[in-house]
Image (cartoon, rainbow, N blue to C red):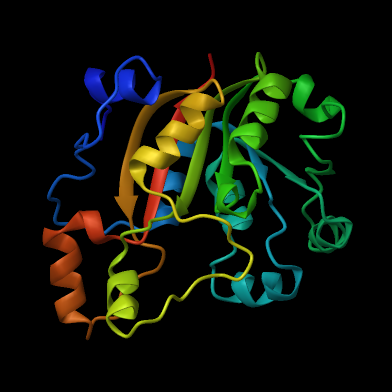
Length: 239
């Protein structure tokens, strides 16, 4: 999906509406997973994977099921540089044979030489912004640090209007990762990026995992109503 001119002006504060309507999805027959969507973007590209280590205790389990995001990105990209602030995670990755990794905090540390010596097509931020106390400051710091070296930033985040949130609400329950600060919508995620000085290129609604074959009703629901899918993948252009 693309952002129309009136939505873009509203995100940038040039226009105001107390009830602006943003189209967030088109009907499509294929339920695409978040990993598949990002992999299709980075195939054959030079990329940086920020937060590459994931949860250290789950890396080998995910590897066994081909669900470790960094491996899948590294398999598709021309080059995939992993960056993480967790020294234990970086050590585990190196032990598994992933040498193209850097221990660094892109917000607080100087720009690593590995980033500044190459022109990168994409930086991948998978399920990171909702963990930040101030996501605007976080993205702005990355933009300022990496401008001129990275062309685009791909951000994925949990969708506030995902189907499971409605079913939980009917039971008077909120189910959420205990480290999350925010639920995102296409508009609010876009607004955060724009406020950080980025330009929205396009976005897509997708699923966080493959639906089992016997989940026929949910499959049909999410096919006909993609606005209820789990995740948002949004591509921002560096300006």
